Image (cartoon, rainbow, N blue to C red; front, top):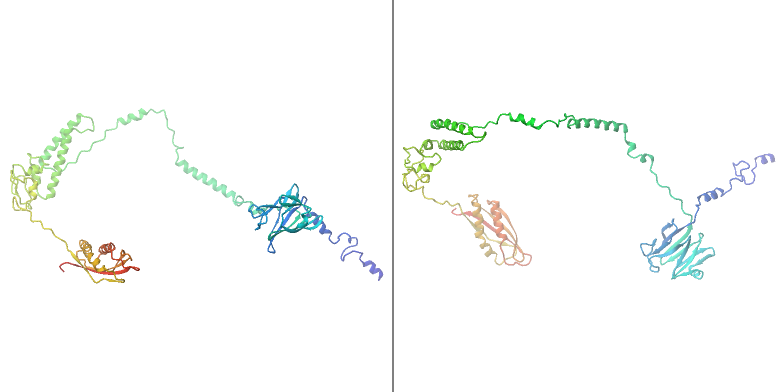
Amino acid sequence: MSQTHSGSGMGPGQQPGQQPGQAGQNRPGQMTAVMRAVAQQAGPKVLRIGLVQGGRVIEERIIKQRTSVTVGTSEKSMFVIPSQSVPASFKLFELIGSDYYLNFLDGMKGRVALQTGISDIEGLRGQARKVGNAYQVRLTEEARGKIVVGETTFLFQFVAPPPPQPRPQLPLSVKGGLASQIDWDLTIIAAFSFLLHFGLIGAMYSDWMDPPVNEDINIQSLIDPLKSLPATPTETPPETATSPEAKATAPTKESGATKTSGGGPKGAVSDKAAAALSQQADAMQMQMLAAFGGNSAVQGALNRSDIPPADLSGVASSGAGVSNTGGDLRLGSGGGGVVQPGKAGGGLAGIGNSGGGGVGAGAGKETAVKGPTGDAQIGATTASVPVSNAERVVAGLRPKFRACYNKGLASDPGMAGGVTIVTKVAPNGEVTAADGSNVSGLSPDVVSCIQRVVRNAQFDAPGGSGSTINIPVKFVQQGK
């Protein structure tokens, strides 16, 4: 038993499951100390400040960069507090050289743990240095405590600076970007295909493949062939059906014009040829007038040789006389006037006044035809609030109503009907609105005209909130 106990016994400090000789290698707390030594950063410590208001920590900040800490009401302060007991920006913790100093004023409270022990703010005034209105105490890296400024409490201590945070890096799938997602083989093939196709199209529409032009060619050699081209033929007026006498004279005139033009420059027309063409045009115009009349009265005047064909007024007043039975100028069956030479009123103007009864016959008495007229009948008006002069004003509008109706009869002679004008009268008597209702038989233009007449009316002031007047108007044609 003793041997079994001695063989299976554990040495002092040996844990269950440990081999002999390992009891002193893993002591409790040993790894914690190693980890603490590794985690501790080299360099001076930094301030860690907590802001307490109303019994709650509302902000906690580690001042990673060793700099002065300011408090106050100014927005430029590191900690903004609602306290009037300190200036707008007060250096509560001031960095002088490489050491921090605590600055406090009269009225501040708190406790600070220093190397000499824990002391109240009032007790530190004796060993503090006076700088202006503030007291200044040097702090070591082991110092900690709280400072009460008004209703705000600052908790502070010195801690090791936190390790720098590594910059965030994107995953490799995102780092590649768009370039890693492109199929470069397909892209290169598509690019060469576009270049080839557009290159061929560009070559087809460009002048690269045109033969070069020899600039040494003489321009005169290009002009000489143009001189041998025939002249542009001139158009001749087409022949029209004329009288036998005109046909007989036409070749003579054309031959004369040809001979005259032959002596002048090519393409020019002589004055004689121009006069002949103008005379032929006048003859054609008069023949067309005769054709429109359906008889040969004008044709006979055109065939006269002693009167110019373009002067019909001269033909009518000539000594040959004009009659509807004989003579060269024969009137159609519709005319019956006879113009004697030497009489007043000769010429074509006298023919226009003939009425088939000889000279001096009138064209009849002129009678003016008047269109239908109408009358406006105004019924009994009703008003929501009595207006003293409503009946008189409405009666005065009757002629204007009738004028609107007569204007509408000009476009629609059979129009008749009625309308009720709903008139809104303001408290001062002005008409603010005039709307037509119960419209029957009247055109929209007549109704709009009546509304404009009513809108321009002026009534006595009804007071209050105004009044609404209903004006019934009936329109009938006179004589019905």
